[in-house]
Image (cartoon, rainbow, N blue to C red):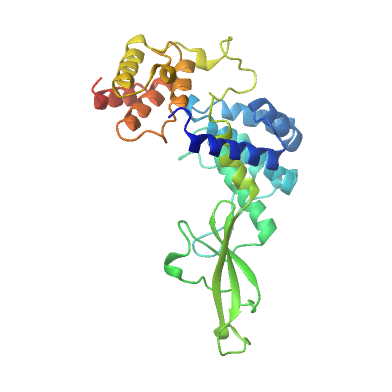
Length: 317
C-alpha cells in the first residue's frame, strides 16, 4: 500500500545498487540510454530502444532492466562479447554454442517460434550475466535449474579436480554456488576416488543484480522511453481509458478499502490508472481479490480486452 516501509526501503536499496553498479545516482531511462550509447555503441543502443518499444506498457520494466544488464555486462566483457557465439552448459554437462548476440539483437529474437519480437533483450541479459559470472569465477562444472543443492547431493567432479580447488555450479543467470574440493577424511587425495566436495556460498554477479535493482528502483512511475514526455504528443500513457471500465474499477477499489489519496480516480488516462496502481503497491502489498483487480488494471492499460472482461467478471463488476 502507499507508504509501505518495506517497499520504500527496498526501492532505496535498489537505487543505491544502481548507483554502485552503473554509476547512475538518479535512475532515469534517459540516463540509462546515455550509458547504453557509451557502452554498447550508438547502433546497438538504438536497436535496444526500438525493441523496448515493442513491449506492452505494463511490461516496459522488462526491456529497461535488461538493457541495464547489457550496459553493465558490456563494461565488464567489452563490446567484443557481442560478436562471439554465446556458449551454455546443458543438462548433459556438455557445452554448446548458441547464437551470436549481435545477430540476435538485429533479428529481435533468438527463437522466432517461441519469442515475441523484442523479447530477445531479456535473453541477451541472461547471457551476458552468465558470461560475466564465468569470467569472474570460471566455467561451472554443472548447471541446475532450481534451488541448489538438491538433497545436498554433490555434483560430479571433473577428472582433473584436486583437493583445494574451488569450483562453481550454475543455478541461474549470473548466479553460482561455490563447490570446494576436499580430500576424503582419512585418505590422501591422489585420485578422484579420494575426493569429496562441499557446497559453499551462493554468489550473484553485479551484471545480474543490476537487472532487478533497476526494475525496483524505477518502479514508482510509468516507464517512458526516450522521446516520450508525460502528457505530450507521442506519450502512450496519455491514451484515454474507457469511462465505464475505469469507473467500475474505481468503485470496486473504494468498496474494498482503498482511500481517495491512493486512488485519485476515477481515472481518465492510462497514466492516471497506472500511477494509482503503483501507489497502491500492487501486486505485492495487497492480498486476495486485489490480485484480480491488478490483472484488470494491467489488461486495461495494455488494451487486452479478453483478459479485462474475465478479470472484471471475477470482481463482479
